Image (tube, rainbow, N blue to C red; front, side, top):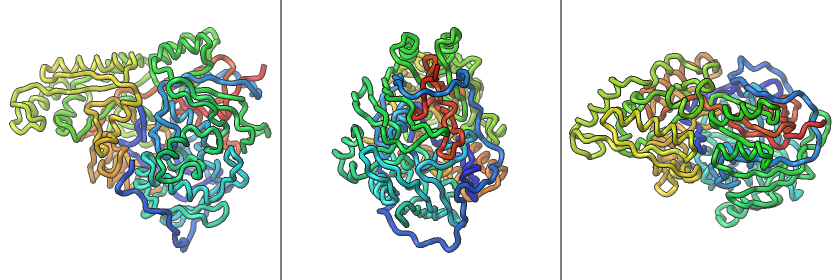
Length: 606
């Protein structure tokens, strides 16, 4: 979840990395209107003093926070143009509207094939140019002036200008996914200050603001003319718009929900590779939701599809074995993302820290990891930072509520014998807990192991429920109950390679942020994250993150199992996922969370 902002080609005055300790979810999903959504686009007064950071000025970033990519990429055989890819994904996308639809790994694979981001990540996790070619900020990072590439067009020929970004903002302000991020990032105005110059005005300092422009819901460029703000029917229709909606490498030609989504190459795509070859390489790509992990791998091995993505350790273990004969290529990535779950702290008994900590201390992480198939692949996690991140904290790790059966019993008994216990049950009665995960076999196995640990205390009745991923996400969002959520103890994933510093919505008050999935909010914890936005020095920020992590681990609103091993697995010959480049020719971040850059995927030349 930690990455430096600014690198060789695009350097920020402030290289800020912020911890959003409870921020990015993807178990599922991530990132609705909010009372704090920004007002209509407004014109900002020009900054008195501006710090220029325009490309291609060069400054080396400090030590990277990037976690290593582990891959078995095939030999460096050059790309050929043509061919198609059929990709088995772990779930259907809830929708393809970046401003509206909550998204996770399968959805991101599809969205970024249609939409281009304003900025992209380099291999070290810092940010570089895409549709935005350069940017500058004023001294207090409240005004950001962005220069756009010229001559970029949507697939219907409409040119992208600064006004495009302003029009997008009008739609984003009403979007369920975008409104909360707008508020959390302090964005209050977007103005066209030139034909290809956009000025973003913030209500308060946000040094890593440009990080929110690398992904949906704010960073993906779309044709707002197809989605009039406030027109629900038009917005829904935009999810299936065959042309005109994006500038990306592919166009949606057939959207058969829960079956397949077909895309064809954008013949007028604006990108070329380092050798001047027109992108994308592939003629077409299709995405096929196959929720069962074993079936997805079998489909690849049998040739029914030519690629698949997975975020399951057991599938990676099985795929490694299948790949030993050379029939499959594997692209693995394990970074700051980890499995685990959360408690809905607005629901009894999870509103009591004794219950939350007691449940964590009653369960062994290693046994859960083994049930997930991750033994020898994933290490136990205690925070959103991987051990090789400069923001990883041993103190936070020691404060995590790890296995301690006697300690768990003491906490749970204290709650059970409390006459004022929050669940309203009589003194001495067992605690009822509902634990939910999607119906993947390894997740079912992990929940059954957890159920066994909890029930062995003799103080817990654990009910297991399993819902498809889309339902699982929507339960956590709680769109029908003012975002309180319809979940109790809910499995989830935490962290990503994105810099969350521009958006602290995962830690914001739940009343204003649908992305605070656990609904836990601590003003001191949040203040530490907000203070870090103003800091440049990495050790100073790390100390703030450590304090925030200690507060969170003491409160235990979320839990961790092991680091999430992810992979894109392909038929031999389909590659490019570790070698794609930004518009300046620098290598990109690869494929975190099994999200591939299909615009630069290729079949290797013979």
